[in-house]
Amino acid sequence: MAKLLIKGCIIVPVNGPVIERGAIAIEGDYLTYVGPQETLPPGWEGAELIEAQGMVALPGLVNSHTHAAMTLFRGYADDLPLRQWLEDKIWPLEGKLKKEDIYWGTMLALAEMIRSGTTTFADMYFHMEVVAQGVVEAGLRACLCQGLIGVQDIAGLRLRAGESLVREWQGAGEGRITTMLGPHAPYTCSPEYLVKVADRAAKLGVGLHIHLAETRQEVEEIKNKYGLPPVAHVAKLGLFKVPTLAAHCVHLTEEEIHILAENKVGVAHCPESNLKLASGIAPVPAMLKAGVRVAIGTDGAASNNNLDMWEETRTAALLAKGVTGDPTALKASEALTLATLGGARALGLEKEIGSLEPGKKADVILVRTSGPHWRPLNDVVAHLVYSARAEDVDTVIVNGRVLMNRGELKTLDLERIYTEVNRRMADLTGSPRFLKV
Ligand SMILES: CSC[C@H]1O[C@@H](n2cnc3c(O)ncnc32)[C@H](O)[C@@H]1O
Ligand SMILES: [Zn+2]
Image 1 (cartoon, rainbow, N blue to C red):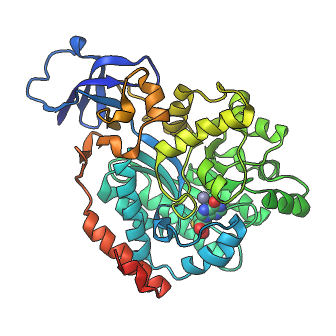
Image 2 (cartoon, rainbow, N blue to C red):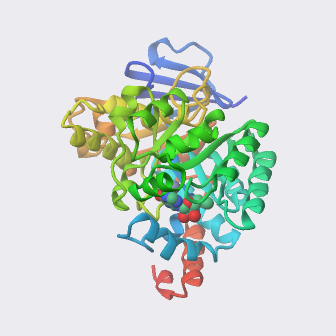
Image 3 (cartoon, rainbow, N blue to C red):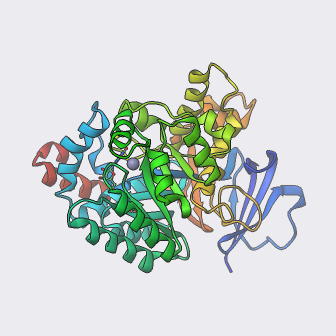
């Protein structure tokens, strides 16, 4: 079994106190020791060694909601509200996407995620078998679902594709891939369809990933049609009988916050997408107070416009303070927990990932502290949340495998990815400007 030892770093395990001069031992795909270097058990003489002085080791970041392939549309449709953005710009272009486009858009996202320290992501899109293929190749961990839009005759087709994804890819990539069913939203899926999808998920033994309560317009539409706001509406339909990951949850009643908590719904808070599409600000402090399992997500790169979980976590913390007028509303340590263990919980993976402790999977990132924005090193957790940048990520390990070493991507060919995405976007839009880079 391969043995890898990381030595000399500050460890932020997330579920326990910071360790000043730490060591992390990895055997195969598991963490077997996380603690002070001095008390590392013997037997590590011949192991592969990462000297990590000047680095902070922490669990890989968990992006709890994205649409990886939408990196293709980065900068293509900006400064619009959600429905206009989707209906006038995004959906027409998505209608032209071939599965190869989705593959290459996803590969670009995977490169961006690895480079910025994300080791696990939850994704909803079309042709998810090529996304799964990309995840296997890149070495990341992912919770994947086929997006299901329950209108016209494509609804059945999509659901069958969603079920096939579950059957064929659950546990693939040495267990790195998990799957869900992905009904897009209550405004694109009829109540009958949502019930059908939830029943299928229960039979398959998987959860659901859905967009919920993202805009005021959605709330009004769902209330007018079905007499209840979105969360209450889907709860009444029985959606939450299966583990559910709900993206956004911006506009909630008090009662809906309690429904989310009682049903252990994971909420993917996507503050930057919500701000950019002018959807609003999710009531994170109130959700946390009620016991909701909040996680952090970027949403797709067409509404963010990047997949940088450092930025997203900082924005989440700052917004919570700004909106409540309480600087303790989301402290640095709490925000970091949402971006790691919170994400793991929302994806049903808290037994495997989200913190650095023996027995968990070896998903570890090393962050460089050499930049001026890290000095003086008064509080490492505060620096991670309020000061760190994606570029500080030095080394990324997933399932015990090094995917990036000293800034060098080990599993992806960035030049090829750039060429493919530029060419494909030029073809999709008919605009050669995408080729000029
Ligand atoms: C059916 S696959 C996923 C589907 O969702 C679209 N999408 C991307 N971002 C958002 C968002 O913030 N709210 C709702 N839907 C979104 C994406 O373009 C795909 O069509
Ligand atoms: Zn989304």
